[in-house]
Length: 159
Image 1 (cartoon, rainbow, N blue to C red):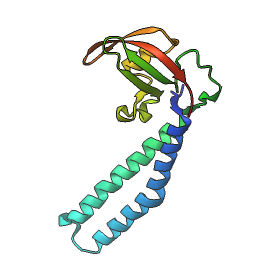
Image 2 (image 1 turned 135 degrees about the vertical axis):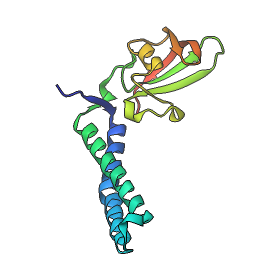
Image 3 (image 1 turned 90 degrees about the vertical axis):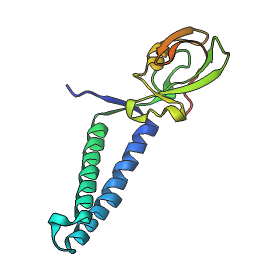
C-alpha cells in the first residue's frame, strides 16, 4: 500500500513550482557547468567539475524526492470543512493559559511545516493535541521546553 502524503493546496503548488524550477532552470545549468568544466582538461584535478557533479547529484536527488512526494500527495481541500473542530489545514488561534499570550498556528503537512511562518506539522506535539478539539477547549501539550496549556480561541480554514 502506498503511503499518502497529506498537504494543503498551497503546499502542493509550492512543490510543483520547485520541481519545475529544478527541471527547467537548475538541471540545464548544471549540465552546462559540467560541459564547461570538462573543457578545462584533466578531470582528476578539476575542482569545478567535481563541484558541478556534486550539484548535479543534489539536483537529481531533489527532483526524485519531489516527484515521489507529488505522486503520493493527497491534497486536502479545506474549503468544505466546518469550523467547529480542528483538523488538517486549520488555522487555530490559541491563548496560553498562564501568560495570556495569543499564538496562531496552521496545521500543515510535514514538508510544508515552517515554525517561523506559524505552520506546524500535523505530526507535531501541538498539532496532535489540537486535532479533534473545538473552540473554548483546553489543551495540554508537552513540548521540548516543557508543558503548555492553551485554550482554543478560534478555528478557521481561510486560505
